[in-house]
Image (cartoon, rainbow, N blue to C red; front, side):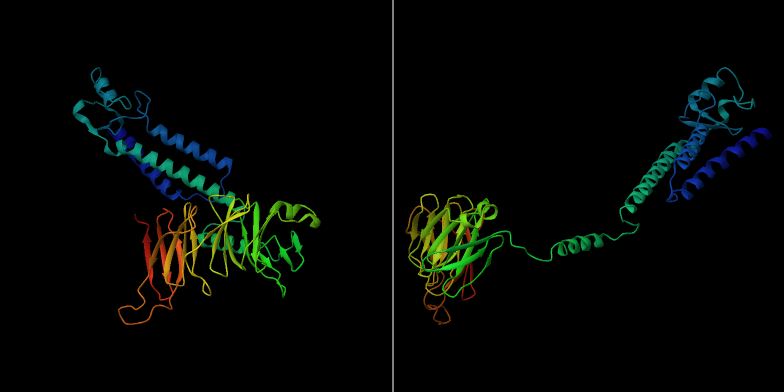
Length: 365
């Protein structure tokens, strides 16, 4: 029994020693070399030998411990004791009554898997940190600095603007220069461009102003061709000074304009024919304009919202915000619609007026 106790005492410290080493080596040193990895694999192989059954030489399953301190697979030791009544390791007398479940060894397989998994993770994590360090990263690098670096690099990327192309268009009465690379305006005493707008595909841009003309230019021609061929691809004349342009996001050939007389006009760039929508009033205040795929909504200085169908000049619907005199007795005739905006579903819009009232309107039968 003395030899058996010596064998039992030698086995248990080995198991505990490996557990202590695993926790001590969980965060490995940053320097991982091939030789160190080879040493780690040798240690793992040594641990595996302690997990082998002396009878079948496989990893112990359903481990049972003998009175003399040796562990075997339960089926292996029971089969052996059916033929002999001794320990296969030390030959001490042994029967089935001297077998006890080895709970520690049964759980050691799971413990070893967890240990090796953590070890591989920390090894891989350390190698990734070393690789990131070669690209300027360090351990403990705050995530907020990445956002700051992105903003800083974007902000400092450009420091000036250079002219890509310059368009000089002159007619009998007016002259003006447009820098077409950016919507920057050169103003002259007798001429003013009030609006410059790109189309849906950024292939064309239109200009409009007090000259009462809408001029369509091809962007690639302005940028790539000599200045002497910078001519409009289309030109349309309006009755009044123009204040704003808006390309249709759905139909490339349609562009809307508003003028100083309160008229909204839809132009067909291909045929150069206009369609005028009358009903609202717009003489001195901006009353808002918005369009979707089928309808145009426009405010009015009469404190009303008008909705036009794109194919019909007369209003399809209108809504008055309030009567001429509200509940408090205040005269509301001086108020006007200041802003309108369609919701993406196409039948709902949000509107506001100069009185500070906001309404959500829905088209109804």
